Length: 124
Image 1 (cartoon, rainbow, N blue to C red):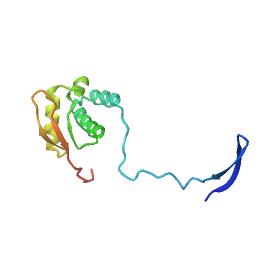
Image 2 (cartoon, rainbow, N blue to C red):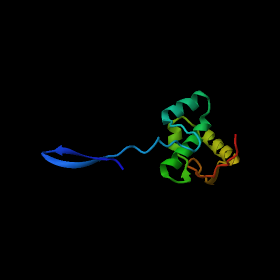
Image 3 (cartoon, rainbow, N blue to C red):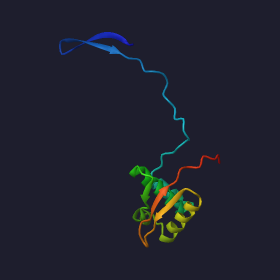
Image 4 (cartoon, rainbow, N blue to C red):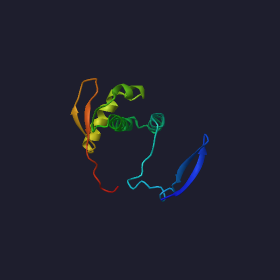
């Protein structure tokens, strides 16, 4: 428990308790992570010649934003980043082959519906 003291507010005596913070701040015990803006991701992936990496980034972002494992691939967003249809189509196939996603539905020229698969916990 903290220390009890009194302060005067608008002419009235008020009882207050001083509480000490409880121990050191908790550290994140999971895997390391990075906060990355869309702008920085787009600039970095395109500078490295990796437009297909933006497809993976876009899928992860949509899953986080929608709080769902199943999302539509945001083709309008990918186009705005300069990622062409061929790149995102090939990227989805490669992500599925790698066991990262499952393609649930494809639309010719439109947004595919994909499901994120549970991570394989092998050490890299």
